[in-house]
Length: 256
Image (cartoon, rainbow, N blue to C red; front, side, top):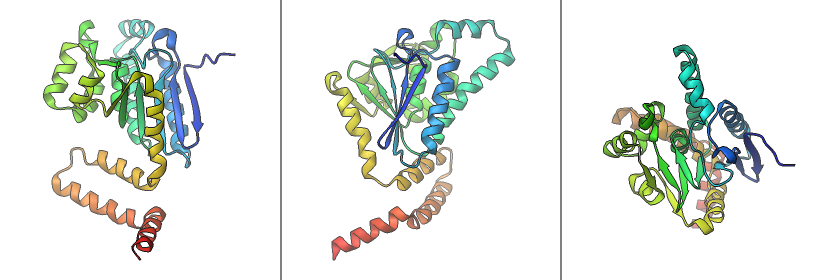
């Protein structure tokens, strides 16, 4: 029997796979889907065996943004109700940053509006060659306000301005050139390439990656001296981890 849950979740080896599961709606965001994403991310973060989280979409598209019912709800809600709704999406974006291991978006088809924001919020974006990205919110008088904080940290100021004020779609190749996308893989080999890419996190230190992710995002907004000091603190912590001690022991044995 087909699972109609808005989000499918499974841990496959060392990878937690989170699938947006509203293909008939192009995986559009609604309250149930956002709640399902949060639950899956929290579960994955609590599992010590998980080395990476893979977020993908069922069907032809990654995510088309808010669905019609969500837009209707926005137009009919009070300021307080809309603030609560926006806060829920904010929590999702913050949660992705807070998950200890890398969160990887695998984008096929379209990632638009909030869907583009969801992909951008992930630590790494892998795109199929035919994928499309865009922030069309300005076309309906809306502002991609929260994702702007993430987008501005991913691309240059000029590129960010262009993306959020023109409302145009860009290709995966353009997204890679802009700095929005990490890697572009051919459509016919996309799933296999994504699987191999994510599997590489099994061959690096989990604790080192966790410390690295936290430090990288903590450095946003720090002065140079403060960032250096934060780096020194994490460097000291890393030296005391089991992974580092074992790695040094292996290296010394190899040298001998």
